[in-house]
Image (cartoon, rainbow, N blue to C red; front, top):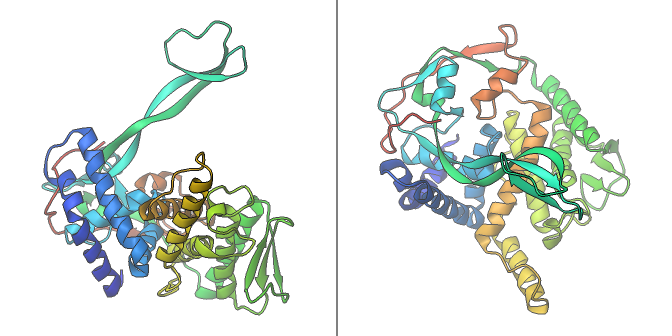
Length: 388
């Protein structure tokens, strides 16, 4: 992380400290822990929506931890910054680290993420056609048709995890690219085009220009247009941006209707698409530099005004949200779209989850480099515990 980004991250951690201190220093009930983590996330999102540099720090972390949700990325980044240690790179529970031949160092303290509490239920269709979920083992209603078992989320819990810098043991094989920059650009373009194809879009490189833009997404024709006058790196950046629109701003996007669709590329829709492009390229080792356009505050207030006006005219309209609600929505949508893209383009690294090692076909001596991690500085906060 660049020095400026480190300073911003430290500032965010300092302001979030009151909310995030409790999960790491005292024993808490599950409900209290979730409340404390949620308060810390609320503080982080407040800062991100008011400052482009704070938002960019979240995107930088998301590029490394892209297999995690946006909220958990923010929580992990803040907790590591509070302890004065390096940013998180690869995170897993205590037993998962043991499974991969690494152990948590004595005296290390857990980081916390928010994980779903799940339950298995029996899904049935009643005689009147309605569907119902029945706890496993309970008698089904008379005349119901069994539709099979299903896993549902019944609540949330705090889950203890540890970063790789808090562990020692068997060196990890880390994927790396061996091609030069030009070959990398060509491969990135190919893989991004594959993402478009899987979502039913054709990519056209053309001298035609829509307005003053370098790219355009046409949902009617299912076509993404990219400027032929751009060099290979710029084309990939524009395609990544347009994929953000393609995945998030279709005609059936209820959330996107509040702040502009891809038909006019404005407002938070543009910020979401640019955030997706920035994070995808960052995960592939391409740093686009400071993105001053990623300023959420004005457009968030515009969304709130739109909702307030609709609610005043129709009491059945959704209640107006807050700035933090908007930031949480945008971060969640951006990280979900980013994950969908990166699962196909497959950048170097593990996306923050050690479980990805098992599924990565590149993990062999000819395509990977050994990497070990030295002894970290001791943590200064958090419970000493064996996580799940």
